[in-house]
Length: 598
Image (cartoon, rainbow, N blue to C red):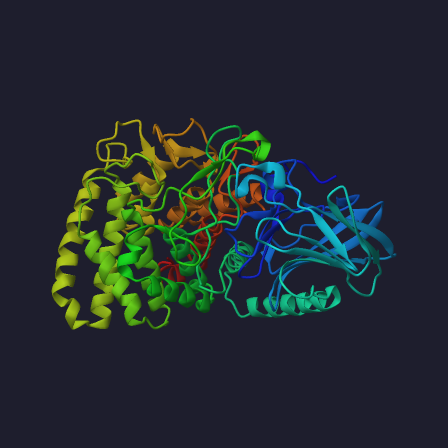
């Protein structure tokens, strides 16, 4: 049987620009959302031991780690002592979303049995009676209809349905892929052999495409992993990037911090395209900015998060019939961050557009309209915002003013560079308010060098978003206050090489959570910017030792176990930004003095 509640960070991600699936080291798939990443999952044992999965009977991990993400993932497993190579791929065939599952012998042939049950359980309703749909076998195709989707299984060997599970027999040989397709769509079922050939061709093209990217000499694998995750989480239809392909993986085991991340956050997406541009993946950035341009500046100011189709994110809903990973309940779909006020996001988006332009990629009028609208919004001093951490109780957050400063500072730079006459008067206003905001933030520095979370916080409340003041340049690295700020933040929020989001805050949920992976990489970036290269490199390597591959949202500092939704795009892209900064700092003054990576 496949692992029950396997480690969160043990998974590998496959994505084809539309659907997403997670693969375990034993070759089982316990999470598959199709035809869209925010649709109710068809395989979801990840969140409930009684949920459906797809697995090869008697397969065990061989200990060989495949790449963290891609359109296809190769895994080597052991079946009764025989080594078998697996190929799992998401492939698009006209009218179908196809999950291909193939095997070939490493040395000697064998016969495998593949088992799959599909269903949506309580993900659409609270009625679990439809968890195992009725199967119908016609010739060599097994068909089920969970809710409004048609799912078929077709193999290179015969398929039978026993106790609600479709079992396919596969004769595995050494010279070609054999297996099955698990597909959602209409019409004649796709041919498994054709899908296997298409999957291999697409994987070769994908690998060739990555060779055109520019990876730093140090920690280049971190950047390669980040690009792979960003590509897998990018919707090919719209250009939107989902924050993570999962929902409801817990930030603390047994707590109530389970949320749905299968949507496009402006914060996460903007950081993703900044890093992608730095690494030479410019097309991903352009496509996201085109998505934002189509939404328009006023729509973007209404919410920090959208569906991949540009719609409103559904209201948060608890799933009473899903037991949760290791019993962590409630599982949720939808997200109440929709409609929140997050001024931090203003700066991150304008920063991303600025970085894109600085790398030689032209900006369209729609992109410049977003810059102007976001800078104008940044002129306003908000009474209270939800902030980068999406606090359910708004407050006068310092991070909101850091975001305002970044938006205004970058907008002023773009206005000067483009000599936009229509912006001349506005740019003078932006410049004046930018300087006022900086003075306000610096005035909040405490005697120990730290910044509070909110301006009226008690001295024992701390927030890692203070590091952004150094990373984005509100405090220059030559300023002694920058060193004091970084040291104070790591002293109050550090847990070894990891960093917690905040301390001393009642955020409306049960106490406790893991250390936040993006914040941990912020520490590396800040140290590199300050010229503390060896300290930054040592910290980066130590983080990688704990999180060697796919990066989740959080980590249990006591055990090193991953927590939260996985892979988190934000975690990977902050790791890549840190890697770029460390590499430049290590390369010497000539490279370190170049424009700061975004």
